[in-house]
Image (cartoon, rainbow, N blue to C red; front, side, top):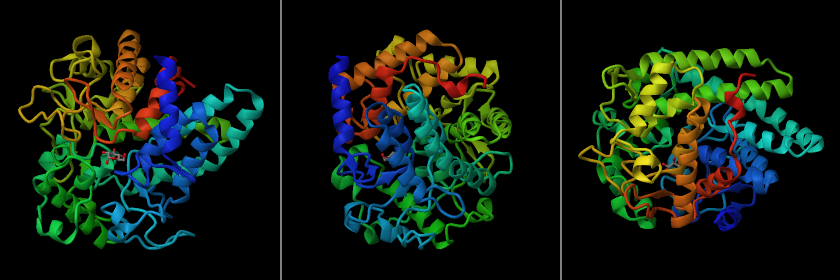
Length: 448
Ligand code: GLC
């Protein structure tokens, strides 16, 4: 089984490579996506480290002067019509040596420091020469990764509590999660926007699996507002209709600081500042995004300062943080093992994206039920960080089993395990490689 899976995963990554970057999948996602590049680099490191570095570098070459790393970098060879919303819709001005309309103005979770550290670790295991070359890559990336963190912590702390706010559900990476429903309800759904701008996603995928028209109109409206405000982050909480602190986005932000501490040590910078920042972010997550009543982490609407009522998988991701208080670590493990989610020991499958017992749990619709490999990969690492070794191994095997049985799909049915969405999806393939190869405790989680 391992050899088959390894070969098919490598094959997917070969097929989806496009000159200097990886596409998430041909068809549905014909450009480069930010956090996809991070997950992908982790797996590419095993089969083609040169491409892993190239992909990360392509992404950071499109970094804005203010430090933001765009959530999509557009491939100029792809026609405007092949993806909506495309380059013309975002209408991003030229910056640095980049032409106009080269990217979006949103961000995604900053997983790249962690990915860069993983690619470096893999290279360093192959001897001094490889480590030296990979060290050069780290040295190029380090100041850019730091600028990315500074953009997020400096310009996006709309709530003033040391947490990053997202200004659009797409920034979370969990695009259509019920975690945004309460905050989105206050965003007008202007359906005439969909008459002016044609959805492309439902031409490439089954409409029953994708967001509803009302939600899609809200998504488009939020982009229009942010774009027309010049992608400025000034006074966000007052000006913008959607300003939300997501537990998994902020966890990845803190994990990035821990990875940067390791990277800093290699490139001759100061690791201590990164460790302190990670601690501060961890404390803010623990204080502001934990609901003591339900003992779960939730997203918080900055405009109303209320936690979302929806128990979603983003609430389990803080497990990744080594300094999370023990009581909250235990609460996450209890929630993951409860009927609301369920670990492989109970369900035979990885964890779903939403509460299985919720009346609106939807096994097909995007982030509203299905199983995603990337989030489970993060959860497994969290289990390793906190010493839940048996659970981590069960989850690793459940993910491998699922991808082997069903294929390298974008996501999976949470009851049957059938593949849904794009059939040859890059991060699923990349993480399958990592899951086959890596049985160790992640380095960023160990005391430096
Ligand atoms: C979807 C996912 C997002 C991902 C993108 C490209 O929009 O929700 O997380 O980055 O597809 O794969």
